[in-house]
Image 1 (cartoon, helix red, strand yellow):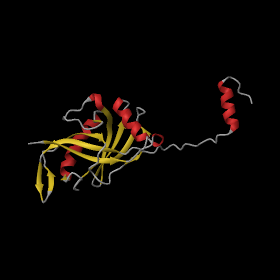
Image 2 (cartoon, helix red, strand yellow):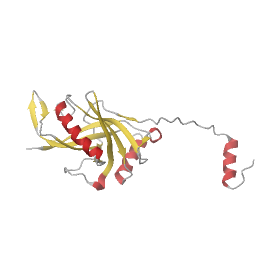
Image 3 (cartoon, helix red, strand yellow):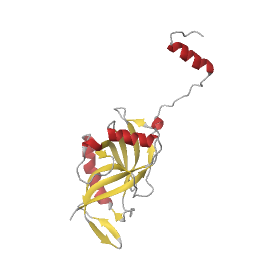
Image 4 (tube, one colour):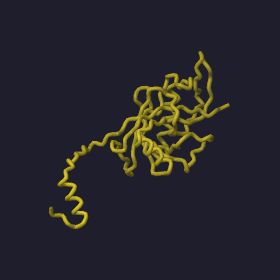
Length: 196
């Protein structure tokens, strides 16, 4: 009988000032969503062929702009739109790692994720799907009937060594030194008296 399988990976803090923006102007974060052919903290092992198939299927959802995920795992295999916090906009392989770019949406749950990240809180990202397990040499091997539903943001990690990194903007920001003269000029200009 199929059971719900969740696997969680740490996301490192991403500061709002260093985040890249989506074409809609929403913050983007990038990182490892899953690692294959490695026993994770849940004692599960996924063959690459399973994830190859599921990544290909998931890319259809990305192309349709509906690769949504929630804040915390619900008890069901349905995506609850009231709890959606992000949309995955890109998915690709980097060796054994499935990498993803996640657009943080301006929903109530998305605002919670953004505020946590802005304040340096390390979050986890966790896959949610169904499948069966077969125990082999003390390891629970995920079987070919595995079906991925989504990735959610959660608090508890299960996959070691997986962190998200800020997507740096290519434009360089130059700071203007703050001087007493600049400050007085700005204050006066706000009240219609720009000469000093």
